[in-house]
Length: 366
Image (cartoon, rainbow, N blue to C red; front, side, top):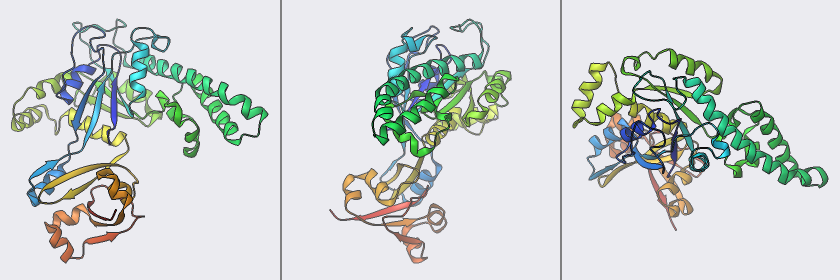
């Protein structure tokens, strides 16, 4: 599942520095606006201790972790929805992503210029929110224009419902709010699914702070937390400068010692990747054998046949059954054979909802 999170923010907030830490794909990190012109894409490994523990028990020939794609998108400025700066390109790039990582500058440094002349993460957030909302409003108005006549004069029930849903969203956007908080029920979202609205995408806010603020935050972080409180969005506190220093260390042991000296249990990058995985509403199941121990990415709520289809479409088409071991049972007993003997291997059918951490084998016939 090639799912993408787009890193967005105003110029010079630390997006490219953070991207460099996340990926081996090196975006240019420079102290001037628009140093990232084309979106850089990095394939990021999702940290998962469960995969490592399974590998220790099974001792396979290879271990394959989950991955997601992170896209570093060119900085946006006020007026982007009207084509200012790199606006049209920015908005086009973000439309193709599945979720948004919104980086906000929450540190003072006279040597790093700010595109608006001062540090104010709440203002920065509102600038980007407004530009995305204006673009969505433009999209919604076009949709309303398309379905309005059919909704009001004909007997087209689909057009009528689409008109009603779009009208609710139009008023919501006009009040300065994003589509993700609009008062519409889940089943009504199908009427706007084709629009790929920018502010409907799930969002996570990353507060880029100085080293002294990485543990407890600062007044900038508190202001961000307060303003996003009603959005039910996650706020992460990360120092891109610290992450950059960690990325330059050669060994895992050196990185852990560095983190311990700072009083941190894991890097901000690891926290961000895990949070991005969660933001995309993803789950993990494993396959474990002597040739390969592998983590597979699925959307939460997938049935066993859908999960099998992630490996190969034939697995889903010819699905017969799934053999399932729960992760805690596998770890406690140490092997698939021991789980079978203890009655901890369950045979599940087509309606089984896969649980996060399941170890699975599929039987199929094409």
